[in-house]
Length: 602
Image 1 (cartoon, helix red, strand yellow):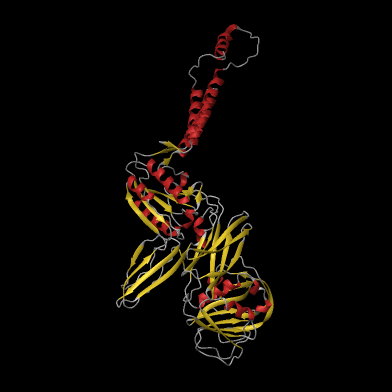
Image 2 (cartoon, helix red, strand yellow):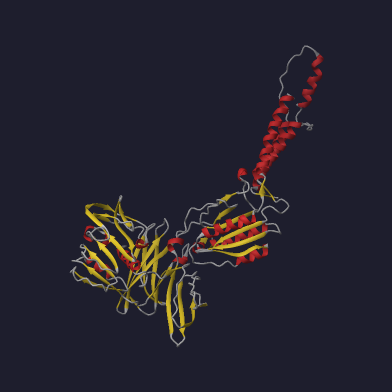
């Protein structure tokens, strides 16, 4: 037997006080009596109330002392293992996603969770059967119904990852195992809130409040032999902080800038004239903080096949200038709507829409008129824009801009809105018969959107969406992503080198499988050899999942759920059953019995 709250035993010190009260003499008043017949009873009263006499058998005192003892035991919450069989089956889930690399006092959250899990296992019965699950992007069974020593060994070897987490997979696996085991208890060691519905167990919070600044976005533009680099830095805490950001080409430093950040502030930093010394660049925050895995961000420097974009415009310099920053596209401009050519990958119509639209290629409509895809009404009053979450608005969550007037467009069924003003949709996107369309229902000169620091990011997101990521616009991949690799037709062997320097062979036989071990941020290099001696090399940048894992200062609490004793509100601790409810019931029964006995013998 063990106790959840043993410090309640201090209240046993009340027992001597009760005993002393019984030993103290009651103060009596002197009265005259009419007969000595009552003298015998008077002597008995004097004897009873004589101070500091020896205690005689007093049934009420015994009952009261017993009640006090039971109350203290109930408050201490005894946990009883019924012959070592209660909750013999234990499931331990350890979160090893990217945010678990955050500091927890002087160690990481993952290290703290593993340490607490091992302490728990050591307290379990010797015949306990333990299942250990690690949970990052997917849940992985490390050991199934193993011994205590096996479980401890597996927990010690659970690796830290930079992958985004998904506790749903672990929860589903735990529920499935629970149905098979019937009598079990589960323990979740995580920094995320866990919904324990239909699970007998508890969630142990590994949350900690620490400073964290992340690098969320990197973009580059080629300028001859140099690069212009844009970096987005995000202060995710409530403190005012200063950070030093360095830019590297390969491993050669190219520049350093100091940034002052207000609480929750996001800033954009530009580096000019970055040398092309390598096939990759990266930015780094010099100072260590609560989570240093998001202090570095990588990008690949590589020329890709350019996509042809035709811009129909009569002087929209905002769009033209924004498109000039996009790597991987070639922009052609005309003001003649009759000069329609079907040989472009995308078309942009700013202000006017031709009667005959191209039959293939993606289309962007800006301040449009009626066309075959949707109908356009009159201009209406605009206002402040609310940005909706979508692939086109990634990294724009804090963007704020105003549109003075918009077109009243009848949004078709395929349209997904991205900008809203009240209940009116100012912009939407979608796909029709394999063609991707974007509609901005306003003229650029009627908005301060082009002056917004997120405008170039929006244009890059748009090009990425239109061209399915074929051009090098994104940060590569994020940790946990499956990397699709298509081998050469005559490929004989392929391997990938991870940021840690290890090499892994990749199968080139069909059916092809994506590479799924991108659990560490950094540069991955793929080498492929063909049957005729042809050799191909590809560099991939894999970055920390800042959108999922960098918000580390969440309010996460311990939770518990007793599936087998719902009516008892049982506290689950140390793989046993609490009998607190039984002790409280006994106290109530003794109080009733004491009152009846007192009334009867009064």
